[in-house]
Amino acid sequence: MRTRATAVAMAVALGWAAACGGDGAPAPFKSRDDGAVPGGPGAGQGYALGRAATAAEIAAWDHDVSGTGEGLPAGRGTVAEGEALYAAQCASCHGANAEGMAPYPALVSRSPNGEFNFANDPKAVKAIGNYWSHAPTLFDYIKRAMPITAPGSLSDDQVYAVTAYLLSINAVIPRTASLDATALRAVKMPAADRFVPDDRKGGPEVK
Image (cartoon, rainbow, N blue to C red; front, side):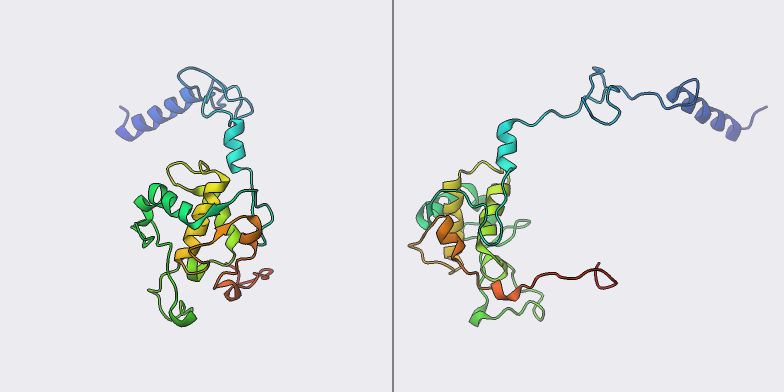
């Protein structure tokens, strides 16, 4: 008479054999429609997941803006235009005054008297005005990732406008300013000199 442990072991073994083939090789996984993803893992096995990205989807992501402004596109936007766009596209997450609404961060904060006391004040708010190193990369982030419900949907003019508005409420540029590629390259962020290149090569200090 088989013990319960023996019966369980046999059931597992039989299940594995069924999942494999007669030779013990894993059987192909199949989706319900047995479709296959060309070039996917185990092509021809029928995962049927995903689709090819459209040209428009690729174009929305296919850009890079460096800290020096390389890669900034043509376009222009004003602070006033950005304020209206912020109210329509951004305020529902970041607050009417960019004060932040959990879990979304505050976008405005200025250190009093130009101080950057983050090491000594763990409650200090890190935001655009006091914790962003290069203005052109703010354009890149907004263009690539915002608004969170439709990233990449803003035009270049709109991104310049929102960038201008956020810089203005952080007292980095005047309320009357407008931004294009040339003007954005010329903006110096208050915290720019607080960042240094990471030139570590390895070792215990690199984690």
